[in-house]
Amino acid sequence: MKFICYPKCTTCKKAQSWLDAKKLKYDLRDIKTNNPTYDELTDWHKKSGLPLKRFFNTSGQLYRSMELKDKLDTMSAEEQLKLLSTDGMLVKRPILIFGDTVLVGFKETEWEEKLT
Image (cartoon, rainbow, N blue to C red; front, top):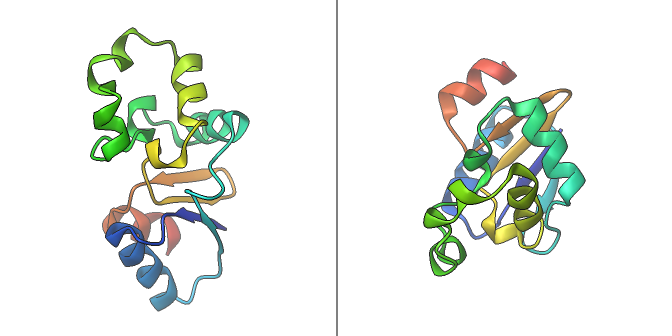
């Protein structure tokens, strides 16, 4: 199981505490220092079944400063994935990957359903 997060993020801390409380083993990856690659993001997007917009950290400073809210609709999926791969702070977190399952963001009920 891979747990991709930003250690200073409170949502990531909650998710990590939840994983630890469930005694689940995972490999932790800091999304800021080891941002996801284009190929990883493409794979995760396919496996997640989620709209690509869900992979963007829409509440992040970088997202707002780049005014992506107004730009994403005019960008192709490939352009969006390439953009996401340039900086981990653009990517919604945490991301949990196990087998063919990819969970984006921490929703305790969803994680409970998929992991227990």
